[in-house]
Image 1 (cartoon, helix red, strand yellow):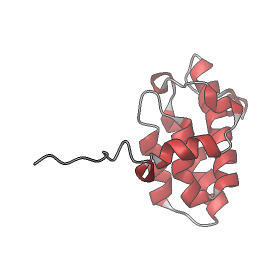
Image 2: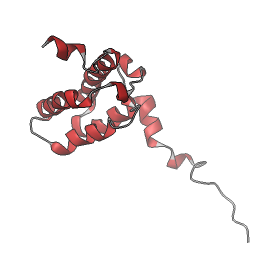
Image 3: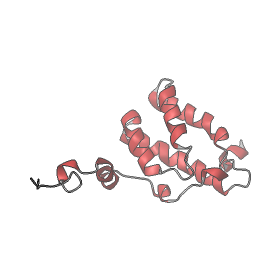
Length: 123
């Protein structure tokens, strides 16, 4: 007996939600540029990430902080997917602002010989 019908991929009721969010959400322009994390000293940026997330949430939340750290472990992290994942914790506007500032630091660190963002070198 042969079954006919559609697969989950063909049925639009089971569409890729992430792809839909990528089209709907607003992203900062600097998220278009890739960052090679092998050129970035993440240990220098981690305290900034923890402090920024704590400021946005109003409480210390190690789960969200480590969630961001884990996503940055990839050689070329996807900033748009990171923003989508963080929206549930930080809300849309705060996630967009946070990712824009974080990505600017990462791009600066990538371009720096030392792997440290220029903004941190000035301090």
